[in-house]
Length: 157
Image (cartoon, rainbow, N blue to C red):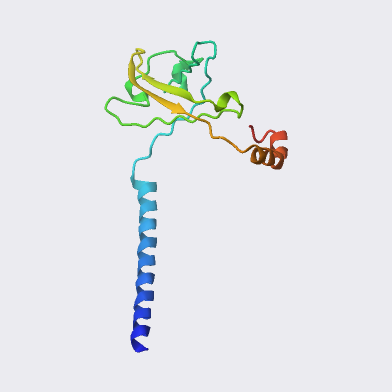
């Protein structure tokens, strides 16, 4: 009996110490991320494809708004005003929201071209996309449950 009591006591002490170590590690990580590590640049801009082209195309300039007029470059920015500088690493994330319809269920392809100020292609990538299929019954139940929010304009389909 004394052996099992000491094993139980040792196990509880070990778990308490591990919990304290995890807590201190989480606090240290939070402080490090908040005050010491450099912050990433989050650049979000809506885009509106031109459907009059054979393939819909949208140009999204990655410049500060004061250098743009109607989405076109008004004046060439100084090097310090560019969001992406020579030799820098970056990730490009594209999130598209499409209304649910029969036409949007087909497989489609998205191509992203990163252009320099002189319109030369710096990077190009293509990805195939497929919209998530929704169960019709669940879609209508969700629509009925959220109907007041849709009617008030707080949600869009």
